[in-house]
Length: 239
Image (cartoon, rainbow, N blue to C red; front, side, top):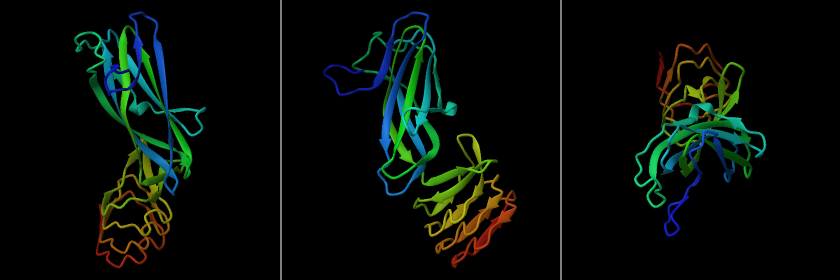
């Protein structure tokens, strides 16, 4: 939607005031242009209103690695209550931003030059006019795999010097640090979240600048060579 002579545009759905629901589906294809693989993303977007709503509208979110088989992420879905803040009823020139959302996506590995697809489904009852706009995608510096009881962090490609590791991703707990996951990183201070039980071999090896690590009491195993060549490490706190 957008004014004919304007620059503001979004993909959306316009529906008349009838009881049966109407659906709008919008797909975005993204390509991994980096040299390394990616397995987690943050997707942000805003919802704009172009027409007064008389009933609730639902925004559902999906992702796919092949464009055919879709996985739904319910934690990031939106329920838009009826609202009549717009005047006049149609406002294609000046849409109102109703809400903004950020959704964490944990997908199978997307290899370099591989594709991932994101889909928004707008399900509207009554009259409604909504659009999806201001979309942005940020790959996570973490890689993850499912270990059966939670997630294992398999890699870290960020450049932070101080870092608190995530405790959950998409509602799944982080329970392990993989072999060499943070090796040769620039980390100086790191906090491992409670819930992590296992740190595999060489998780922080060759972290030459690492000076401080906070380890939760939940950790029951630290693999060998965990901090090999961590010559600056002077402070280890077990909380």
